[in-house]
Amino acid sequence: MSLRIIIRCPHCKSRAVARSSQEKTATMREITYQCTDVECGYTYVTSLEIVRGLSPSGKPNTAVRVPMSQHIKERVMQQMLLPV
Ligand SMILES: [Zn+2]
Image (cartoon, rainbow, N blue to C red; front, side, top):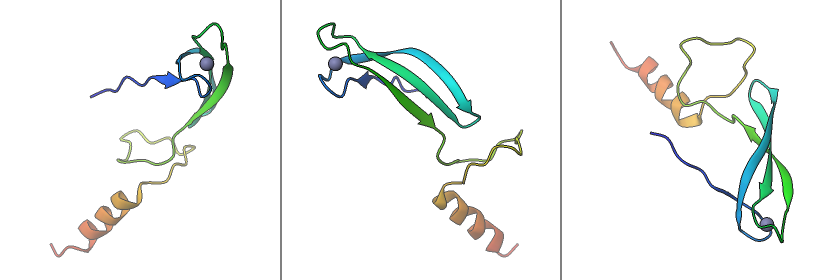
């Protein structure tokens, strides 16, 4: 499943389009958006950051430090504590 995410201008609520993107770290990227309303024309920079993982990677990069979601941690702990 994939989602199509529409970003709107915070000023006039028109659709904004990504104009450029720059990787800052392995888990954070800055994306520059421009409002499509020519009378508004607002241009702004957003950040896209991985904030938590939901399942572990099968090819983990040891330099990537992203916490696991709390409910995943609790599920793993419950599985470890179950009698075999
Ligand atoms: Zn706008």
